[in-house]
Image 1 (cartoon, rainbow, N blue to C red):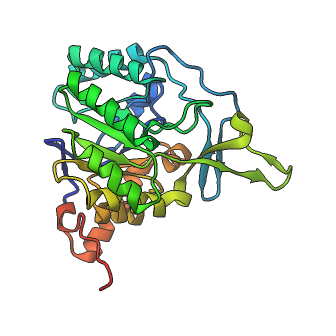
Image 2: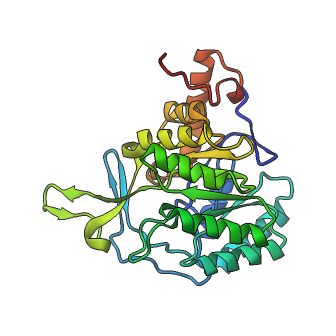
Length: 313
């Protein structure tokens, strides 16, 4: 069974990786990912200065997923770039590393892109346009004009492979409008989706919210959001030019979930909530489950079914 995936001109052993923010804040966590069966890995979305993030409790596991309002805690841009450069030096033949940035302003994002451009980093950069959990900061990707201007400025200074992480969209008009913008730029990929912003979960025993920031409002992840994630993957797969690939993120807990994301058109797959619950061992399990599903269905490679979702005529 061949689970290899060609993405951004590179071949990965399998399509699985962590979602940024999960098991990737410290060098130790990144080492654990590198030693797992994941096909790739991505760093924590970073800002230039170190950020402590929102007050705790700010993450809570629930039966069908999770709610969080982390507030972009990270150890700072230099910490992750130093790690990335060292990783590439020590692993010259390894799959490319994904490097995530999420500045608190367009200017900060452009400054980080410029530093990556001038560095020796050979991997793939992800510009996070969709952090829903910083108080007072709206998601940039819900402002279509601002998104266009940001990408215009980014590609004026950045020539290395670049993808964007998007929030969920819920209307065909929004799929169309965002795809029209994205198709104007030489993007390597689109990552769909970030968590569904500003959900609320209540503890039935105490009648209180379960996280402290924003009076309990937070991003929803896990099984809750798989249908929304699949819809966004499919919507962009059918609207974007072929050279822009899709990373499917949201609600991947088992091999069937992974199969469905690939069927909708995803090329790579990121796991967040379930990785947080199980740890890097999840990749061994989910690879086995996907391979078993492919065997039952008679597929020898992902390319045989990727993007081939059937509709009812």
